[in-house]
Image (tube, rainbow, N blue to C red; front, side, top):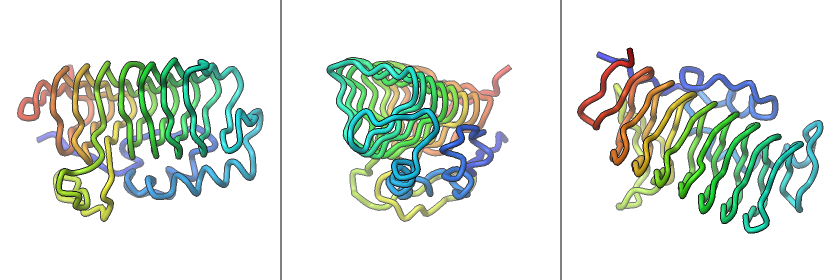
Length: 221
């Protein structure tokens, strides 16, 4: 049976200097979500070497490209080398690592992206954590609120009561989500795992795997 890992240290190798404290303080990644706003406030107050203010409450690194029709609401920290394409909407409480791509008409709120993350086409990423080199195919979304409005439970090898009403997707380092997928609230995708397009996901999926459907998960060879 493939192990379903959910701890922060098992899913992410955070080497982004201004994010390490946030990751180290969270045994489980969803514990970061209520702390994002406070963490950004600290970064805005203390500054990050080489970073400047793009607007009030929005700190950006070097060589960041922001298209004129993109909207960034404070507070936010945009990592060096990141590209924010036309029509992108960052609704606040967003931190990215370096060299990320936030694509046309993609919407992000209360989320953390590590380095070289790509959400390039029509993606929704709310209340989520995306690891290094994670990629979301066109139209894939992180659904972050249950229809009954109750707190999200993470269903892995055991059930984890989070106490949070809003949790989107947790994508470990190297996770690759196919086009048109829906990650139901609290879905966790393991390291270097790929998901077939048009898959509705729920629960925890193991690392180094291929998810052909919720009931058909094979080890990557």
